Image 1: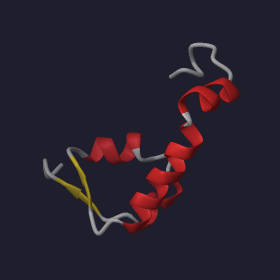
Image 2: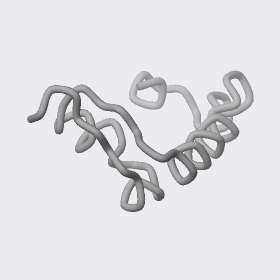
Image 3: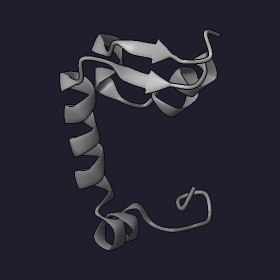
Length: 64
């Protein structure tokens, strides 16, 4: 979103530590017994960019 608003990637990383956050989220996804989500859409959109999404055990609470 910030990149779409014209922020440079370096500025985003410097200000918000985004790469560190993403790295930590990757570890959590890789090591979690289950990742709880509300919808299939959440998996397909919000988790699409994560490398470890393919090994994640998603549990959809809505059942769709």
